[in-house]
Length: 160
Image (cartoon, rainbow, N blue to C red):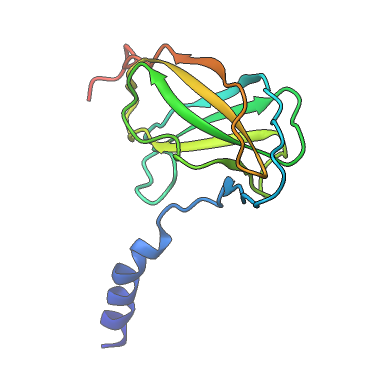
């Protein structure tokens, strides 16, 4: 009887072992104050990681990650990221201004999506509009960044 209870407890708790991520972005708080024009900032793609199958159904290996770095991060500025060209398989960006959370580098914006647990990954080529927002809610001149990945073909040796 005790063994049956232990087995049932393990089976019932497996979803609790599922993948989870620390929050990589925080909402940018807008305060009513004098209108300040936010500084336009250039960004670069630091890293793109594609999902894969590592054989563990409870790992985060199926997550894709895009890291964008602000070249010169202005103080008291949030950013709105918006897909303006191309198609993406998942909702990557929020509609509100965000800033990096305390879990990542202060000038890096980390975006995570469910890319799929497959060795094969489709290519993507998107253009992102990045709009700075000041504490007063004033939007500045947007910059644009192309983000692309060639995808990943099934390895020649993989038959299943």
